Image (cartoon, rainbow, N blue to C red):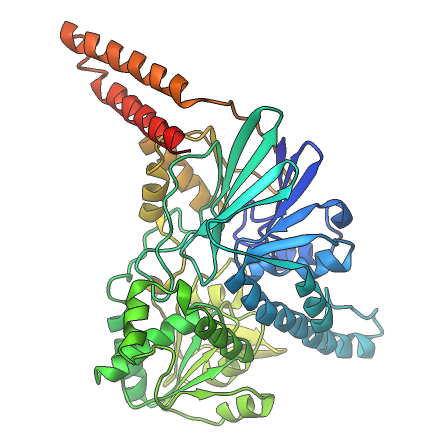
Length: 518
């Protein structure tokens, strides 16, 4: 049994892992690379494996850095099932064709230049139609349902609390009489977010493939993000400009609507017109409305009181390109939410082009900005940035609210992993920049004592099959350790090792409970 890290290794994006056991080849995620050009170019090459030989795909959630190359996978020969939750499937039906459309538009723009220069013409990675065709491979899975995807592999999707429909994957691999549990966290969510439930705790796994996006920092504004949004909006209103928010179409746009709605109801938001200028965000919002059964309790109570956070009075959706262009004529008093969240594609680039040079406007970032993206460069303080072939001066205020992140921060990651009743054999840290992963690895070793490894791109790691352990065997081990501990206490020789022994005993007790439950 082995796992190969074909993405999100040494970088945040491009999530893709191939798990091989016996005759089974199961792919977890197939995401698009984002960020610096050298990273993005990985999207255009051949897959480092043969798509037709993959037996199944398990998709953690709909974000493009996890799902964005699925149409390419199908285009190049994959013909089996893509397993995902119902909400993830519905969101992919919106996001993947949109991704294909963006690629078609970008390639068309580049090819106009290539024709003039006599260079070879480019082809999109896939088209919108090819993305729609890929949706036929999706199979909807319920949370907590155990699904056999190959003779040797089963999976259970459990709530990751990241975005609507997001899941951690408990993958069970059967080899002979042994069973090995490999846990993929996908993107682990923050606690207390609107709409989505908190991430579930997991008690045990043999191997953990864990994200580390915020492994080197805390979310500074989580407790007061609504107040900060209120402050930035009023500052922009008094300056007389526009508030432009690059927002991911899924989850971030809906979270902002949630908070703006509450501020408006409380009379705390300035009299600014709110626009959602993203066909994908509009469609994604409709998917949210379709799945209230997986909302968290707070959101369900709001809806029951008739205060649906997705129905903001005076909200304007701009669907057509013509409507979007009209927004560029607004000089002030507008809040414009537009994708993409990292400013590298989509309509947001037009709004930046028309507002970045105006000191009365504000650009507010509310999401993670990967290295090399326009959003990251703006946050780093560049004075000029190139958009659509034109150099734009940066005179607008550049602001950031960190508390909108859909990712668990450093403390949340450590607390979640520390809730295990027994140490996993190995933790693999992925989906993080090198500093974030290295910082988190050091803390896991120091505080939890777990084995940690940070894989490099395309690295293959061997996974040792698990052992079959009965409840009686665990009980005997528990009684043995408890008896030795009691003897040490009576002899007075255990004082220096008391904490270590107690922790081991607690872990054995947890293993006993989980084994007995199974």
